[in-house]
Length: 206
Image (cartoon, rainbow, N blue to C red):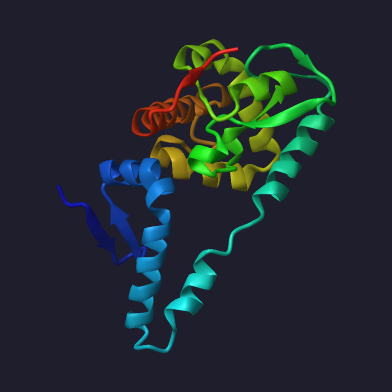
């Protein structure tokens, strides 16, 4: 297996799909080490013109995740009617935006990871991972929220979905809307199972 390659036509580095899946799933635990090493290599390649600290400062600049969560909350608040993603009960203004894969485990505010949930339900879940059986029971609601998010934030949603699922998430025009989210759902379940196995995290159901 050739893990890496280079396409001179598109000027892109190519990564074997299996390696990419491992990087995506493990990236939240190896990111800091990779960033530091990347800064050191970039500094060396620049002939010392760029100090590692300068490169590192650029690499760690990310958008405020709390701001991103607020954008999603405002979208859910503007919807005529929403339900708790995990219980199906109708929600009023007293809901919370739940990270399906908790921040304590992934530190990820990607759109595919953010759902409205009742406060009591979210407090019960806390830093646990939803059971696969629960995801299967609630998959239509999960997909409905993904559609809402992809309509409101199309570029961001597709970019973040592609990071999680790679080429398994087709472009919007490639498939009928009813089929588009299934590959993402597969990767969503895979990420949760992988995280539970690696971190030894308990599973949760309401």
